[in-house]
Length: 260
Image (cartoon, rainbow, N blue to C red; front, side):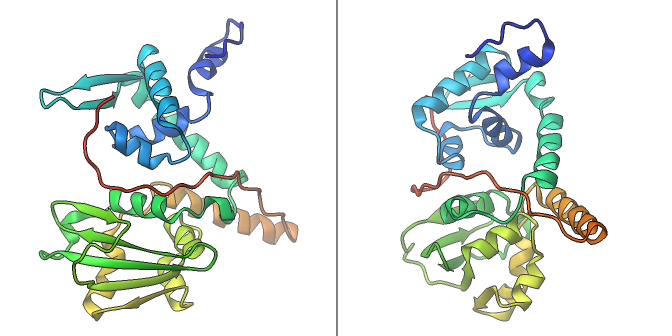
């Protein structure tokens, strides 16, 4: 840990939180992730060794607690101090959406990460009573085919054909689906422009968008986008803010408990 050598609460806080990946780990914990493997899959650019080190540091500083269950798996939970970081994440996300968030860069278009986020934010009570297999065919700069298997008890992501009959097919440029997920564009508008297309029963097509809670940052991004558009109208133009790059990775994904 880097120490600033300044007797200041801001310096002390940044000593704990300003290391690379730390706030993104906190973001995932606040979003209900508790297992090491799921953290690893939600942060594909971090090595497992570094993730272990960051979790250990957060535990040492009282931000998280590590709980070992009788079934011999480990969970990570935020303490009161960790839960209070929700306000920091909200403010940081709002600032980022307003001043540092444009369209995604090519390096940020990880289809596996997007589908992993999507499977985590499903309203299971809105799903059909029977299993539904959705095939995603991504086009554009990042091509590939992946599957989400929807059940009311679980939602799984498959990188290889699950050997079940496909009920619904989604065809989209990965960039457009990212924009919809994060609130840069509305789902209905993307469908109307044929940026997202479907092949399958009309009932499943109509129900599909209602299955998802969408990104926790969606409303923040929409508000920031609307604010920028108003500002651009008043000033006669504004350069789109730069977007920090993100490393992409593809790994096999489900959500088992894990220990470290």
